Image 1 (cartoon, rainbow, N blue to C red):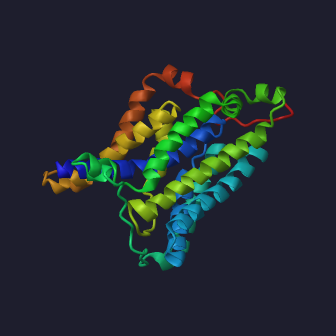
Image 2 (image 1 turned 90 degrees about the vertical axis):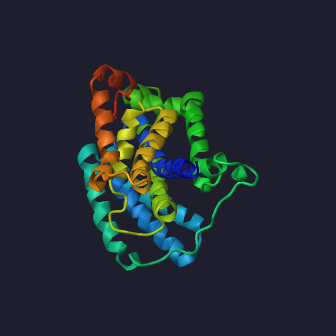
Length: 306
């Protein structure tokens, strides 16, 4: 039972990285912006957060630095695609490539660096419950903050006027513009917010999930987060569930290896990416389902004068 409790705990830990990044991308896409640069933003944020904690000893400053790095890169991306109307796909890919190279360069001196001693979190009383305690109530606070963030985002998107405006900008920016809403500024705010969340995910990766810095350590998680938004049909609650599903698949490989299951390690390592491809292939069999749920203006530039 202890091994299954640890597997569940590791699933929540791994899924949190994907959930935070996917929620950021969801906000972008609800506003009609397709950002393929999550991988690069997460890498830059990972080294920014790691370097900050190494030099200051404060995890929360590290998270702030990661979010700031993601927001800064998203600001550049937003200026290019929203005001200069560059191609969103090409700009996002360029951001991913830039992030991979820049983070590798900036992280050279931190490859062998060590973080201060990690704090073990434990919710009093609840953390002592057999099985449930180790599985659910000994997590980093960011795990619970992410769950609360999903609830807050659901309320924002579907219960608040600002969320309605954001969704209208993603569905029909021309109509929103005709009603007097500043479409470009709303989209820009969504892009920067989404970038900050991607940065937060990158910082969580290097500070909590795998507390070290290694070049390319995001290892495709930005792309999985991007796929999650489609898998979840742009619904925050489904994003969280999908993140834990993919997180569980990721952790399953280590669990099977620990149990002595004789499966090639290469096959186990590719399970998260294989499951992503399979899920997207299954979803793509029904294009109408995607078309009904996808923001109508996703990836399309907006020209105020047209």
